[in-house]
Length: 419
Ligand code: HAM
Image 1 (tube, rainbow, N blue to C red):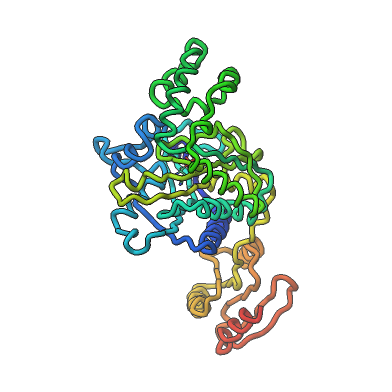
Image 2: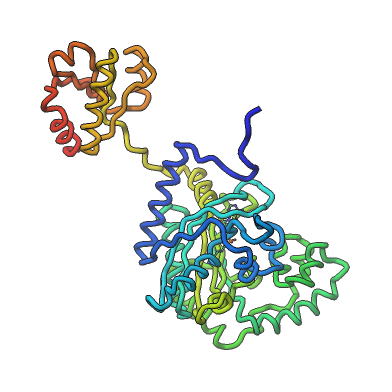
């Protein structure tokens, strides 16, 4: 019995990797267009970082972290906290008071695996640190919209909400708890626990009868101060000007404790139960909470597996990988060594080439050249080596051309550049 990969992880085979690379290249271009700069952080961090930022009572911290060495370290379940840790530790604030950072990295959460939900998954994310201007929210959301546009993803709902400041939420939570306490014997076991530990998350319930109960519950928006409301109104107005369609969802709360004010999520019908492509929001207190000089911030992250699932479903046209330009069909040991040298010369000119390493017959080698869709085939045997000339066969029209060994690399380079 062979050893299988761990549950909830994936192998990206070459055929998938080409596609993922295309997605990542495009995302990097979009991030750069908005002047976001890449940041890379370690795969694991001190466990305390996530406890202090994401929150002890959240699902991720209480159930899903991969922690080790007596709980000292944890494989990162998300990137916002590590980015802020790096921002503080490396004094990025002193370099420039406003930073736009992006990342593509693997995350780890010990969740129940299902379609679109993995234990190791990849996120593209952006974090804008240092300004609480509503224009930053709007620009960051427009980056998300651009991303969807670039990949031709139309079938989505963009949900937005504001969850206010810690103080505003605290006032709301008093009334929410009072309201929900009346339904104590109707709430699910999960919600009863949350009522004590993290009542805001109950708003996120997917159970029909709880949704019914929540219909008449207090609404967080009513507890917000005029400044918070005006920030939100300004964001919405900017989105309208940018022609970004949104739906306000007053029950949209996110799974981490660090969020403040603007929160959003983009959902797609092309995904199953795990329908969020990306999500994020403001986290104006996190920098200070993690020991930095106060700096308001906002960000979002997008799951690349989910993005890929949507693209596959929509028959997105991925570009084909670069073809092999020259395939060397060889006969005999000397010809093989000679071809190795020719390939070295070609590669020095940046030309992609390949040969046979399995001592196959000429016929099988030709078949292989066809299979990998090589553009040209060169057959090298004793005669070709003696005469120092060989035939280049164009595989698309079967035309042949004889070239001198001495002229070959120059010819190949010109031919390659001419296209
Ligand atoms: P999140 O909502 O936990 O937010 O994750 C963002 C995205 O990552 C989700 O919308 C989804 O596409 C993907 N994702 C999450 N969990 C899984 C999983 N188990 N398997 C596959 N994909 C998954 C965050 O992580 C925040 N750090 C986002 C953020 C950045 N907020 C502010 N800045």
